[in-house]
Amino acid sequence: MDALVELGVITDADLLSPESVTWADLSRVHTSEWVEALTQPETLASVFAVDAWDIPSDALLDSLRRICGGTLLAARRALGEPGPVLNLSGGFHHAAPGSGGGFCAVNDIAVAVAALRESGFAGSIAVLDVDAHPPDGLASCLGTTAWIGSISGTMWDAPGHVDEVHVPACVGDGVYLAALDQLLQRMPRATITFVVAGGDVRAGDPLGGLGLTEAGVRQRDQVVLDALAGAPSVWLPGGGYRSDAWRVLAGTALVLAGHRRLELRADFDPMRARFRRVGRRLSDAFGGIELDAEDVDGLLGPRRDETPRFLDRYTRAAVELALERYGLAEPVRRLGYRDLRVEIDRAELGDRFRLYGTAAGVEHLLAESVLARGGVGETPVLFVHWLTLRHPLGAFRSAGGPFPGQEVPGLGLAREAGELHRRIAERLGLAGVAMRPAWLHVAYAVRHRMRFVDPQEQHRFEAVLAQNTGIPLSKLSALAHAGEALLDGKPWQWPAALMVEWLTLPPTA
Ligand SMILES: [Zn+2]
Image (cartoon, rainbow, N blue to C red; front, side):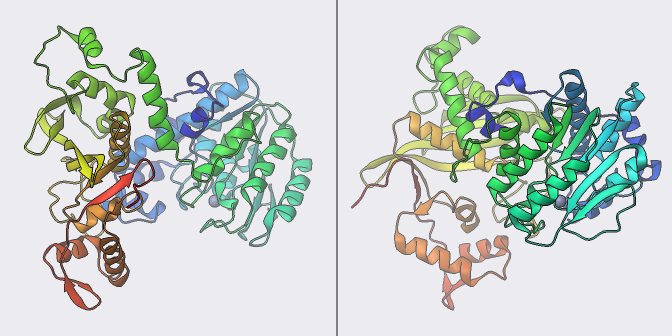
């Protein structure tokens, strides 16, 4: 979504926000035993192939019900204003009435169809499944009440009513698109068509294995869209297991929006783009100065000259507004914290920001950072002296248990915090963001964007990681802290050396 907004392909007006479907909606498709089983973390764990203690089951079920609501809302919109509508998640084609599997716990398409039927929809339904895997769950949920056509790379015992085309592994664009062409000629013109536009057909997908190029997937989406000829359709992302699988979904949306030729640069980072966009919007709203402190104070209360400013610039209100606008407050609320409150003051090493939130009547510290203007050599940078992101209500979910020095689980917003630091540095005219990570695991978490200033330290850090792959990261971090990690067979002490991320080209010596 960030990619599409950033590219100017969609605006806020194009976005719909679904309601969750009810348990009764799920029960029209799924057996009462399966619906009840879903409330157990063990069931979800087996569907998603992880350990039960790794499943935030209530939050996950909320999401799944909302995704089903998205597929339903998309169907209603498509029927109301004929054309394609995309749900950003869904296409859970492996979920059957009484079982789930392959990352599919509930069948959003079947749940949406049942809800449409319940509200009197009598039209015909088609499902075109161009995910790399077969629509086994869909076939048993929908039976013969819908046409189901599919191209899969996996052999399965397709029931007679499914028009299944099996293609070999690494089939590539040419053969795949020819098979699709044939299938589309057999596809009936239904009142509404659901398209499972799986991203896992793309080359390099660890579970898909069909080997289509990014251009080939766009071509797939284009010929399906052409075949639908403006009839109502609901598009769903299905699978996609590369870390950049979002690119396929973004490509599908570009095709649906009539921009199939728009390229997504290889280094395009949607979150970074979103932060820049919000930053620009804030600048406009406050007369060319981002989050002008006095303006915000003027809006929110009487001006007090002693108002402390974070980094001599941002008032408390400005910081609170930034947390909202950059989309950091909402995920914190979703974790169960209310009445978010920001404090800013001076600490020994710099300016301190603290975020508090209340849960069950108790106020918790959720985030704390100490930032200051500093230097790497002669070059001015934003120095992060301290950063902690805390989720006191959460359960530890990493396999190695808590990291050393960690009392409570993290908020899961480290990347967002890093991006916010970049933006602050940029706004203050600083050349980069620097820190001295107190622990090896902290350096590990930022290793893709920050490097040690001293190339020798960078080299030793990489060597220690490479030589200790059998040890959980939390253990390695504790050993390094105690001077007991091994580097080239000798004990090695974590140096807490200076790391930096340059926003501009690094200064040359
Ligand atoms: Zn798949």
